[in-house]
Image (cartoon, rainbow, N blue to C red; front, side, top):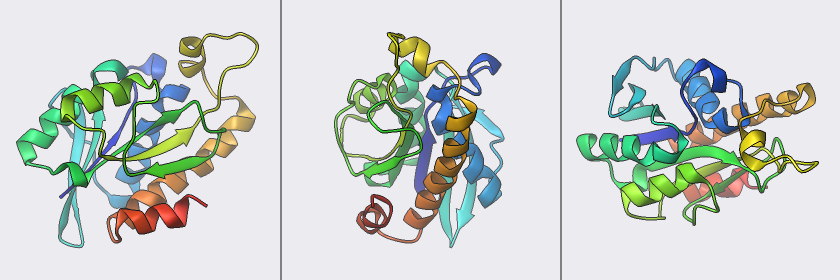
Length: 186
């Protein structure tokens, strides 16, 4: 069984923001894999499907970013999911727009959603896909930037990035994560 979590904030006002790129990847996977996000429990919305006889759970925590770990922990505990079968997708200020980076573990790097995930799962040793959104320019605050919308030029890059992130997830369903990292981190 594998759990793929996309981080974001619930509500219409946040739908198209930089901070919700994790939700966008989950939406893409839901569409590709025909796994409807039709269940609400564990402070999130999720769907369950099967791929090659393996159960796949797609989750969008609805707790707001800084409490995402509560939802992740609830699903993991209920379904008895090993830490090794968790993959979290989230926005990253330290990567340029449109770039992704896969990691097997690491610190939160200042990301409140990842801080919460680490706190609630009790470890930094879980897989991630970091999706680049770049840093704010012209003195804009980080919170205003991540809750802002992509420019039309950035949006073109992000659509490709969403597809590439979903591709990486699909590869992980078939291959060891280290191999997927080597393929996608070039």
